[in-house]
Length: 536
Image (tube, rainbow, N blue to C red; front, side, top):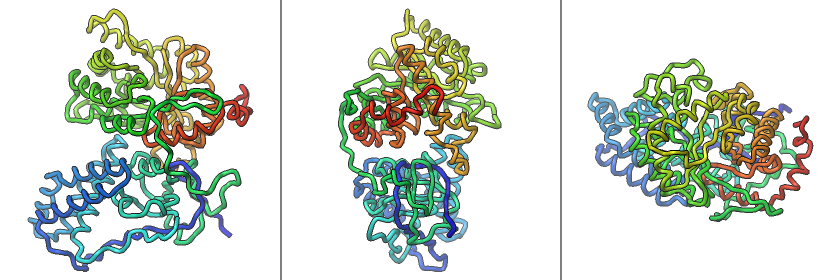
């Protein structure tokens, strides 16, 4: 017997064994009849049915995604593109496909993975519009009558609105990303998911497989005896207060956000604060945002955010893999190791000035913490301090009114953690970048998914050094990477000394519920060997 073992991206945590059922996404035969519709009728029908899907959904995240797709479907540029192609004499369905492909390609060429991921949303909109042209009802998309593992090449948000998600025990896809809306939805519903590349060759209906969403593994071997195979609970209670471990230690669970909607979601799911505000999303327009524009955006988010703890604002991490159309940025061959964040100050000396002034102004009304990314040397820290001092002087502030810390995400900062802790007022560990730098493996490449191992001894030793440095300097330390929301590592992180987690908002109640079942003393006993100075 050949043992199948596919290694890909761990998209949503959890481990489940079950039977495969492929999604029935059959392509319409071009010779099959389609309805003849005017563009006005097609547009109205498409918007109405999308709105119906949104209203029928029980998931706040899916409703938000479908609302975003409604805005895409309303865009006059889409319908103008379809009309232009119709005028050349091609069939309506071809005009739709060509227009959608053109717009999707524009999205996919964006270097920011989150924005590039919106290509799937416009393709989803295209599938939905094409479905309105069909003269016969489509076949049932996923005819599961009992819990099955949903397997497909792709999965669009609107697909999930058309199937019974209570029968989806796990998801395996050949295409997707960690920032796709479907991946985010799977995490919020606590459905294990893996993006595993070439799956058609290996997986067939009724095959019994194990999906390990912790490690990105799909195999026909049974799960380890220590791993539960039942689908996880999907109804963790939402609580709007800090939680305690069984031995009485308070743990703060915050949310990662990048927009007003994210801040509202963080409050809805009971986050104890904003552990990471990604300000680079403020720069996504067609011009560099002014100080007043950044102030308005920060203030609007602060108004919607949970008020129980200061908002941790990360200074913009732009450049590198996050280029801006209106800035002349270096075309680095390896953007993750390139000219980004404070490294752009040589080319743009005022890059941080306007943002830091905006942050300091907002701090007069709301509790704020400021965090600098990509600190690799002590000199990097001093340079950021100097930029902050410029902003303070320009505002006639005699001293800095807010805590200032760093994001520990570069291996050199791990080794310098004791020295950096003497200057910074807090640490926040960015495990997404730290893991890919430690293992020299781009996290966006699914073929290298086996290197994304949060429990690896190398990372455990790095985290232990960071946490020990923070403890010795009596400064708080949090963790805001994907590892923070991976429940397989919650006990390990508690044992290492982590007391502040920051995760995507839908994972907040899941993590809080788990933490209340754990005792830190027990966690430390379980991981005693990994906590020893010369082991991991």
